[in-house]
Every structure is written in C-alpha cells, then in structure tokens.
Amino acid sequence: MWSLFFCSLALILGLIWHWPMIYQGLQGRLIYTLQQLEQQEAARRLEGVRTFNLEQAFVRHQQGQTLFLDARPYQEYQELHIEGALNLTPAQVESNQVPQFLRDVNRQQPVIVYCGNEDCHASLQVAEWLQSLGFSRVAVFLSGFRAWDQAGYPVDVSR
Image (cartoon, rainbow, N blue to C red; front, side, top):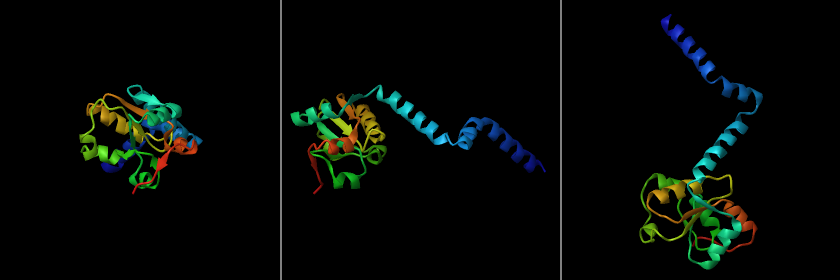
C-alpha cells in the first residue's frame, strides 16, 4: 500500500516538475526547443574561442602556417578531409591522452579545428580541450568541411 502511494506521489511530482517539457512534446515543439537550447549553449561556449569563416580559414590554409585539425569521426576523415589536416576526435579528447603528433607542436602554433558543418559542435569540444592544454592560438572553423568541399578548396584522402 505504501509503495503504491510513493509511486503515485513520484509520478505526480515528476509530471508537475517536467510539465513544460511534456507540454512542448505534446505540441510537437520539443525537438525545436532542444535544438534552440543546444545552439544557445554552443554560442555561449564559443565566446571563449576564436572563430573563422570559410574565407578566413582558406587564407590561413594558403599561408601554410596553421595546423588544421579535423574533429569528425575517423571514417569520415579517412574518406576526405582538408588537405594537410590531422584527425583529433572528441572521443580521443575524452580519453584525455595527448596524441603523439600534438606533443611536438608548439603551444603558440595557430590551430584551426573543424568538423562536418555549422551544426556540429565536435570542433568546439576539441578546441576547448586544446586551450586547456595551453594552446593559445586555437580557433574553430564554423562552416566546417562541407562548406570547404563545396567551395572547391584543397582536399585529401588518408593513405
């Protein structure tokens, strides 16, 4: 009897607490609201990271002084990536182990991190991690690989 009472109480309190989200779900607006919240959170986090648009990233690539890091999954990177880019995924970042190629990179080296498109936030995660390691010139290429490829800029495949 008491377990039924406590289960009912928990259900009622849960419905009251989460009613705004439940109501939006019933209205068919929950996905839109969650996407909006995700974009707001990404915008807040991007305040601490420099960003580049397509043209700025291309100019840096042409100058040859910037390390490009592809934050997409390895399979996507292997198929096609910005010419000269190295792969560093959020999964590698979460393991908190610095890849060998980064150990030899000067912390003052300009670095641009990108992922698939502007809706992808993997590049932001990798950029924040690099900053926490002391990399001082980290930027995120917001438009991502899709825009780069569509612009006809130099791409490469892994060997």
